[in-house]
Image 1 (cartoon, rainbow, N blue to C red):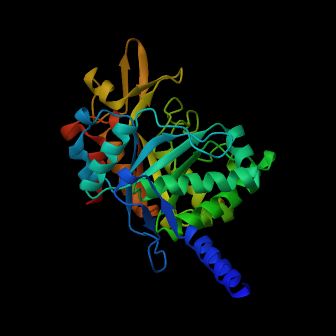
Image 2: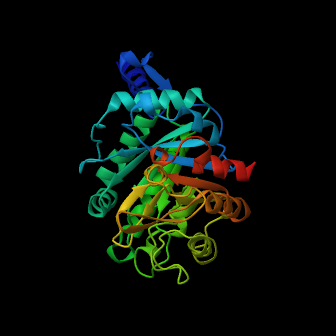
Length: 340
């Protein structure tokens, strides 16, 4: 009887260990389980061209030709629930089609998660919900054969203690993703305004992340020579100064974010493709329509920012894929041409 009990206990122990090394998936996935890859995780340190795209974008009108100009496509957005599980995507079918399309074009993919600051802070501070969220995200990435997970927590704040909670969350999520040979990235504030948001990303959190997308836009008033523009070349330079010099982010993890839209003084946005259709010069950075001046990045500025990203960082990021123009006026193509 004792021998039988020992054998049973050993079997249960083995099954428990296996649970950590596999993710069970539905039968329609094509397999009953997916095993962890063998060998150590090796971070991708090559130059990245990252584009965010809405996961529910219509694949019939998706500009497939531009996939040749990017290395990563991040689907926006997946939202957590307050118990650490995940909400259902608004158009799951389109997400799966776009994911397959990207992989067919040799582009890496990730799901980007969003949620308000209070939701994230509460989830990360509680060990039970934090670990459930980590598991939910990793299971999702494995289930859909994504290459990584991207965080759009806007933003951890030092004055609420969410800087500490976020660091623990990032470390735990990165460790589990890396065990599956998948990456963890994050989109962050440009850091140009002093305060708890700027201080909310700690050194420990940055060390856990594979790369960091620096949102060097929506920063009207920073460039005193062009105060109404939200994303000038100088703003890009200042954003890199903050993250590389003040915050200590490694240049090999820095990805410079650029906008594919313009904004007016009332903070209303208009996509670059819509601006060009309205008559905007693709080589300029400002256009007046319906009596309002919109400030955007044209081809020349985009090429200059791509060169800056290559010089001081290790990638360029675009928000958002569907807002770019087509053909020769494409800003994603302009950056690609400048980087060749």
